[in-house]
Image 1 (cartoon, helix red, strand yellow):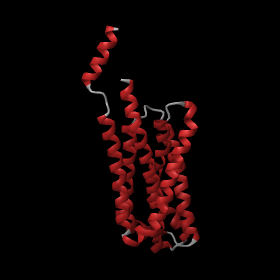
Image 2 (cartoon, helix red, strand yellow; image 1 turned 180 degrees about the vertical axis):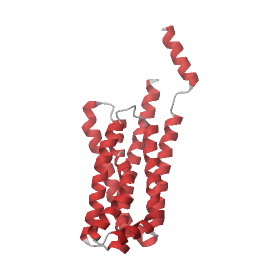
Image 3 (cartoon, one colour; image 1 turned 90 degrees about the horizontal axis):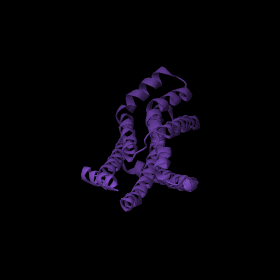
Image 4 (tube, helix red, strand yellow; image 1 turned 120 degrees about the vertical axis):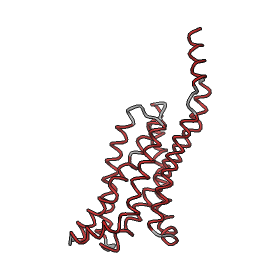
Length: 223
């Protein structure tokens, strides 16, 4: 049974690192696309980007707090996958509802500074809070030895930040030139949902079957 647990752990950890890398990629890709979404209504000056960055930093901080709290309550790969699925669903309104929402805010608030801040909050706050929950939850699933917790957390943030860097460069250099913004958002959403489902499927496939549990219990009784 111990060998089986070690084998599961051997495959589970790379999966978690892959998911953390992908979440970092999507976060920065979405943040960059935020500038393109707001630009037709509020422009692309420095205070527009200040609004976007402020909202993302604020929502990520709440996400880290919520993810850390959630990870203390029976953390599992199944719940981890659900975070990705909820994040993917929460991003979809950005693709399908942004235009009328931007127009309504633009007409209601004359000052583009506050208009862009409110628009950023309306579009990105909730999905980014959910995405922010991924990192602390990842640490909880990866750490099995408290003496190595710092090393594990450091490598996780290295992987996640590397994903963010690649998400920034690939989105800004290639994706925005080849595809419509709404299509890119939809692809990011689909990727997050698929990653969440893959985590849940992995968890389901590696759960002990009823027969093996009975055998284990019978063996323990005999001993």
